[in-house]
Image (cartoon, rainbow, N blue to C red):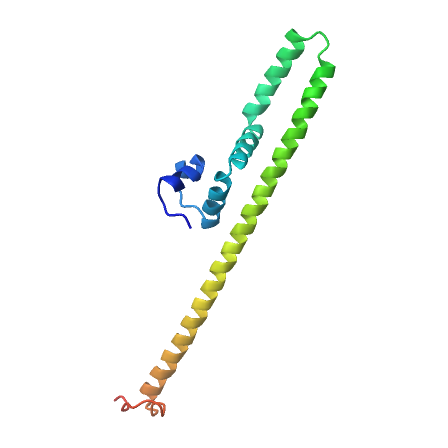
Length: 155
């Protein structure tokens, strides 16, 4: 695990740091993994931009300007450009889906471990409460203490 410091602050995306919220450990761990790879950082930025309304408006303006002012017959070239862009964007979408699946798996693994620890702790507490209740009942009811103890009965 990486200790908090400049390196960790650099690896966690600004959007997570700016929110001011405490994040699930799986979210922080996945963010650190994603940000340690240059290619994945670029893919995340492209996917984030491609999924925004700015992307839609920018393309609407660029295609309108291209069709109206730059080419007399824009359709063959425009079709080629849009097809190539769709190929690359679909790849980035798949990268984003893989990232989401990895995050969900990491979160599920973390949650499972936390639930198992909580179950173990609760079971141990329940056993201790049972033992204390049994001992208290024996002392109040005047039953002799168990044979393995050298104590006199309480009054």
